Image (cartoon, rainbow, N blue to C red):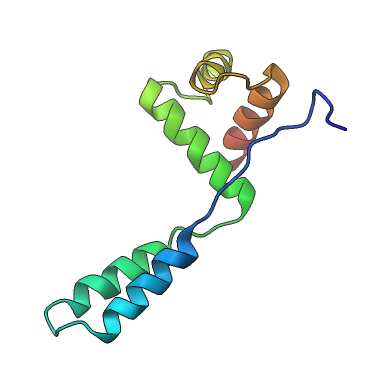
Length: 104
């Protein structure tokens, strides 16, 4: 079962459908449309990463919106993260902030 120290944040990736749609659009694209579609595809390809990297990016984005630097204000970062994600446990918030700081 779940323990209180586990971080339960699920990373969702729905990029495969978008990639398929872009590739299909490229087959029927005009010469003017093709560069834009190729750029969009390269952007999607750049959104990859492992689950931990994606979580850290997500947490960093939330904290940037709140104007909090997790390296200098770790406790404030944990509080803001818990405000942004109702139901997130203290232990999970601490773990996520530590992951962000370790990646920095």
